[in-house]
Length: 469
Image (cartoon, rainbow, N blue to C red):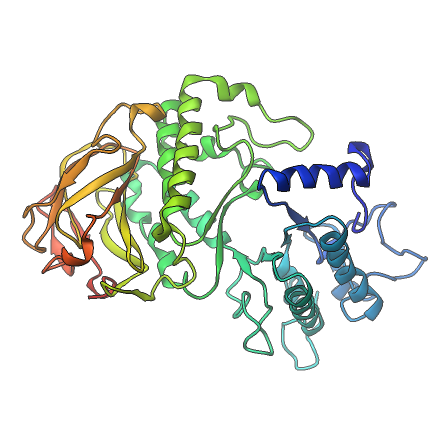
């Protein structure tokens, strides 16, 4: 309920006790909140007093037919007070740390999921739901005033402007973070493809760079993608080429590395940290026993080490909200493309944050082992291997440079002054830490331009404009 916990699992004091214990362990609690619509069964608000009380009376406004639900009447003050009060209640009484607000797109668009003739325009003849917009603005402004530490997250799947700001005043919604569903969908489409077809879909990995500076994002791999007959994440890896289980796990490791190192807050749904085989079922417990299998143990250790590295190295998270902002003393952007090799399924970028040592992320999403791959670097000197997903510690084959080893730059390519020559195992992720005195080791010619690679004759895009020098 909007003001009650699920009684079959315990009473209010039991839930408060659980939250207190989680807080003592420094674990935040984020609640899923649904302000957009509600069920239409006999236990719901539907026709609460025999009439349309909580919902719009006109079905063109009051129904979401694709989901079989009723839409709250955001025009009525009583309903607005009910919905806002529920958030305030959980924040004040239960000390909830954040709210993930579901289906925001269905609130702010009057024509969401509807054909012509099934919806009513607003008073300006437009598709936006002005009363829903004002409700969300009031909710977020009040939360920032009275509970400034509580995080408000919007599950919003469109290009609506200003989801994570209150400007422009007419349309800014004022959330703290936005669910990046586009990244989730695009990247999973790419990873389902067979290796031979991935180059044609490579833009699905890089497209996010065109909009990631527009909002403050959560980069989710959530319940939406591991339920409702969609399959688990492990099933999605290489699905169209019927990839073997071991290679699926290796590809999933690389995918998690990509999620954690790109701008945005990574979110992983329960069970995916050990690669649960079947999709999630809310009526069953997770298959925890699978985590005891050797290959899956390696995946779980990888997730643990990856999150530890993500939290410790500031370049991997501090510049998430301004990925195109230059970071001094070197003047490089928080997110810099280094390599974009579609033919080889290789991708690389460098993360910066002020004077902290930058982190270079390198990915091989293809099924081919690249021996002696040459990759340009923005700094010369010794690069320390923070993580290699193919390391034996993570159940890998031990290909490529080992964790904690140091790689030294040389002059291996004609299009840049400094580069690394290293092995890139198939389906792998490598995170490298820049030389300690990187500010004094800037490459005289950083990777840039469109050039023909001497590696397999592939075309490589370096995006010189994104390097920031």
